[in-house]
Amino acid sequence: MGRKLLLEHINVPGINTLEVYRQKGGYRSVEKALKQMTPEEIVEEVKKSGLRGRGGAGFPTGMKWGFLAKPEGVARYLVCNGDESEPGTFKDRYLMTYIPHALIEGMIVGSFALGAHVSYIYLRGEMMPQIRILEKAIAEAKAAGFLGKNILGTGYDLELYVQPGGGAYICGEETALLESLEGKRGNPRIKPPFPAIAGLYGCPTVVNNVESIAAVVPIINDGGEEYAKIGVGRSTGTKLISAGGNLKKPGVYEIELGLTCEEFVYSDEYCGGIANGKTLKAVVAGGSSVPILPNNLFFKTANGEARLMSYESLSDGGFATGTMLGSGGFIAYDEDQCIVRNTWNFTRFYHHESCGQCSPCREGTGWMEKVLHRLEHGHGKMSDIDLLVDVSKKIEGNTICPLGDAAAWPVASAIRHFRDEFEWHVTHPSEATTRNFGLAHYADPLPKKEETAA
Image (cartoon, rainbow, N blue to C red; front, side, top):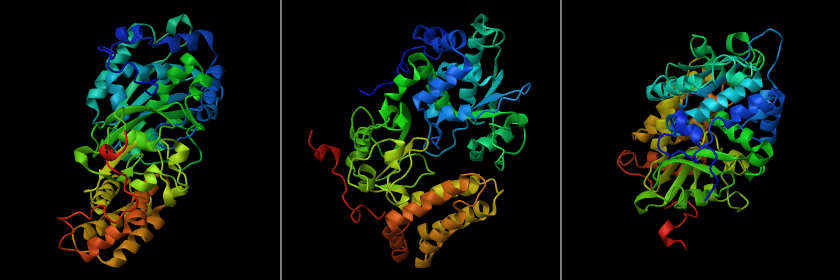
């Protein structure tokens, strides 16, 4: 059994309440941080832990905290990014729903470390149940003396607010989130200046993902060095994975980073294999914005080594043979799934969610959606396939924020690894919308779980 740091008590009845959460050791990190540690020592422990941002980019959290400017007389802010909009990703919503005090505890410790006296949790506007859950938990924490004035008699003051957004994917980008939090349209800002210098209301600000902030709790409780012993290489600690698609056991799993990809898919502790006795065809490992991989490349690196669920192993070989861990939005496709159809569906999403600020993204996502629609509905041409590749190259790296890259990578990788399926849609137009290409042309399909040795 893998070690659980965030979800160890997730199934305890009443764990969403302060009383039960405290019985299971909740808020120990607040008492330790505020009474026994300085803000600088907390930041140092987070650096020692090697914790990397769990929202997608994987930037070292302690380093990000260390960048925060600290001018005299200027407010600082910690903002939690709960705008979980990546298709295939739902682990933050799960955490906030069932164990909300884990996030609030992390927010208190993080705010103290950064010198913030007002902090915000920003959620998608559609997450009304989670908003109500968090507001209730905040009220419980405040009544118990963990929020408000003079927390635990230490002289530290903190007010924590939940702010719903308007339901835009673009607001998951930290500067667009800050614009939305200020009451403006959620358009990404040009950087520099970075939020650590001029963020919310022009003040120094740190924006962290829900899981990243919750992970601060075990780091402070057990120490950064102990946390760093879990995982592999620079991928330390545990990671929440949202597992969906054609799996026997979809859901949210906490894994130790470094678990083999094959064990994650086929082990009964995790996904339990592919549903309905089918064979795995392809995987989107980190949410819809990362490159898709065929099964043979997902389980083995270009060097033939077992691929691991870690930042480094999944990206091994670059986008030619690798992908990204991203936000942990894991989607499995069985042998009957149509890559063209699914890629078109992703592109529809990115076209709809583009803020329109950058021409390559605004126009390019629309072009890709139209061309993929044409291919999927039996009206495509062979030249359309190269046109898609060309448009994706025109978008990638040419936009203010990463949404353009997020739209381009799935298309480029789908064609790179499944070009024959795109060509089949051109040569079989009458069958394109009624039949799937199947698995026969793809190398090294893994045997079904029941065919492997025990």
